[in-house]
Image 1: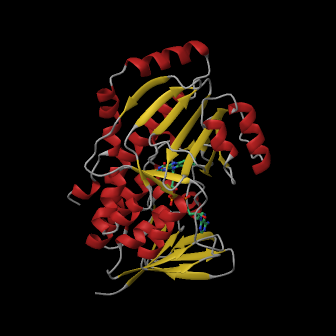
Image 2: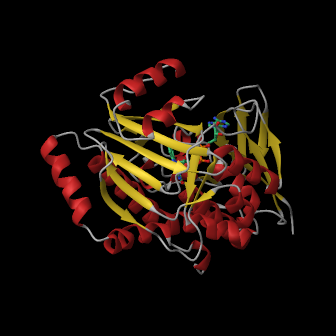
Amino acid sequence: MQTKDIAIIGGGIAGLTLAICLKNTRFKCHVFEKNPAFEESDAAICLFPNALRVFRHLGFMREVVDAGGGITKIVMKTQKGKILAQTEPRYQLPAICLHRKALHAILLKNAEATLYPDHSLESFQNLPDGRVNLTFANGVSRVFDALIGADGIHSMVRKGIIGDGAPIFRGYQVWYGIAETDLEINYTSETYGNGQRVGILPIKNGKYGWWATQNVNLSNDDAPQDAKQNLQTIFGGWHYPIPKLIAETSQILNASPSDRIPVRGWSKGNCTLLGDAAHPTTPTLGQGGCLAIEGAYILGEVIRKYGAIEIAFQQYEAIQFPRAKSIVESSLKLGQVGQFQNSIAVFFRNLFLRLTPSSITLNVIDKFFLYDVTALNI
Ligand SMILES: Cc1cc2nc3c(=O)[nH]c(=O)nc-3n(C[C@H](O)[C@H](O)[C@H](O)COP(=O)(O)OP(=O)(O)OC[C@H]3O[C@@H](n4cnc5c(N)ncnc54)[C@H](O)[C@@H]3O)c2cc1C
């Protein structure tokens, strides 16, 4: 059978996982990344069983699990440290938290692809014979059999396929980082204030991922040093060890959580979208990356079966869209509740958290975390 060349735009979780899914097939992956190096930021990411099932299917789950720390207990607290609720997920497969750089390195190692750093996609055209012509900012222009836009929330490929403008900013800022410290906490926590939240995610070997949010009208790109001072002003009085984690973080990053209204129509000819380019979601459920991994699996399967052609891409979208929509919408709603600022709303939210049995909480989140995409008959 004839070899086909697929251009994947974006060397993030989505693009690299697809390159792994297409290993040892007649589809040759070419991964283009706008940055000068293929790497990830100094931050933590949680992966739940729904994502790890894909890695198990691909044969490197153990490597990923060993790189992180298990999430065995989740505790919800007030900013003074009072426990509102706690739950102990017991899954067949682990839920883990790990350094994004570690995950990225494992994906890169397992991918079978030609890598093109410093290649920022500028535009593409569908050609009459079904192939796609790509033009990059560095002047390179090349024709491929198919194009996968795995180029994140501000996707250039999405602009050419759907063209639905800028993502929607959801009204709060998130700062995040990894602290290296002498703490010994063996549970994940989420702490709720008024219009503010903090999450702590133990990794391993004294490394703790954390994130902190605050409601804002406009996104705020404070410099790293200012970020630390700002955060100590906002969260300095919150329960131990929040101020210590902030103080012991060398690099603090920030983002403006955004998403898009889920819409269909991800494909145009032999081009389609994957990961955040297709269905960006706010981070509250910790599912954006997991969903990208599920999507890469489905896309890999339909390409193997039908080829890198529009009909295959439509089937991928038909499977992935309802689940992506449900995650994007649920994450948005949970984030809105988490960011309640009004004292009465905060009181009732905290009361609800205190009174809800952990079995009910688990039932709600299991719908997202226990999904098994590898069991689908594609
Ligand atoms: C604070 C925060 C916490 C989160 N926590 C979690 C979590 O715990 N668990 C989870 O599953 N998800 C989490 N997410 C979501 C997760 O990070 C994303 O869903 C995931 O990274 C999406 O992967 P992706 O490969 O689709 O996109 P990206 O990671 O954005 O990768 C896109 C790649 O494309 C490149 N690119 C962009 N434009 C071009 C171009 N024109 N040409 C060439 N290359 C281009 C970019 O440089 C980038 O490398 C979190 C997000 C945030 C902001």
